[in-house]
Amino acid sequence: MRLDDLDDAVSRLDLPTAAETAHPERSVVKTVRDAVETAIVDDEFVVDCIDHELDVIASGRVRRGLVPFHAVPQLGVRLAFGYWPPGTTPGPHEHTAWTVTAVCRNELRVDTYDRAESYRHQRLVPKHQFDAPQGRTGYIFEPAIHAPHNPSNAWSLSFHVTSPRDGERLEDADSCPPELEQPPATLDRRPHPYWEIVRRRQQLGTTHFLAVVLASTRLPSATAPLLDCSRLGASATRRLVARVCRGRLHEVAPTSPLVLRRTSPLVELRTRRVDGAVHLESATPSGIETEMIAGGFAGRLLEHAIASERIDLDLPRWGLDDDERDQFGDALEQTGLFVREDAWP
Image 1 (tube, rainbow, N blue to C red):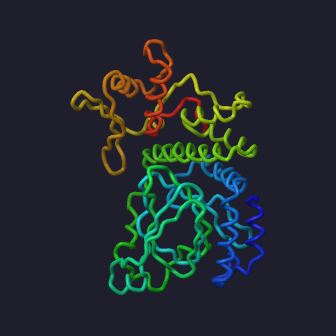
Image 2 (cartoon, one colour):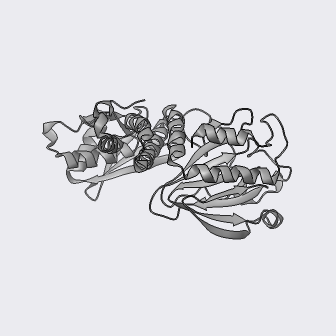
Image 3 (cartoon, one colour):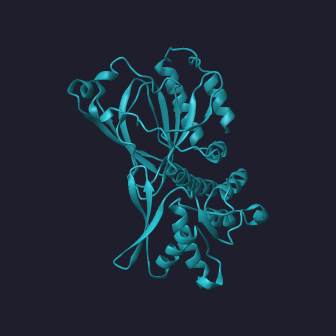
């Protein structure tokens, strides 16, 4: 099954067009749920969707919530992936129109709340909690409040099909419980250079996870998106892709030499010694944050990287073996503050 097949299946249903304000019948949403349930267990479908998702990642947008990688023509129905590092949750939130959600990899746990009672008492009133293992597919038809989270120590991946009307303000929105109120928009709309760090960190994390998912399928069709992952990802992702795509090593982004440079010279960085360890700190929109802590020789390397804004970890002067180089380089890349000189984009 491919993404076009799901498009065709959804397009044949009696769903309102993107320009219409009507909502579909419950039976129609259930049919969408059934189609997604069939699609999501097909690795060919997952690989096809990831191929589209990598185009979104390459565009360089900072992810806030669900970012669609595709919309069904005419209907405006949005398709997106959700990423769940261990222990994470977006917190309680409300969907105002129909949605279908499936767990592609690993698991989620979902808390639901009684919407009517929550609005009446002005506090979230718990309703149910249920586990959503890999392959579980569910739907929301009427406005609903829930809070999914990843209870495991591994990343999870979810797949979302949402109405173009989801997120519209409802008539009773002014009386929503305080837990659902959105914080006021900041008055300072000037872009902060730290958002480039956030974007880079998101790109590295999601790209590596998608490479893991692609590698697990063992499908020939996964090779092309894996090669895209090697271009978009950090050194650890490149090494993973090199192991999987041995027959096409000439197309895999190189893993060495490992030369790192500052992602954004406009972000203020500093190091501070605390009890013999070196703390790497950065200036963020919300203040000074500790990004990395290193001791011993790694701490001195960290101080050198900050002072020079560039470091070649393959230089003989550092005396690093391959494992030491990879371990330190990976940690520095994962902060998002430093990027390979040959990174793309």
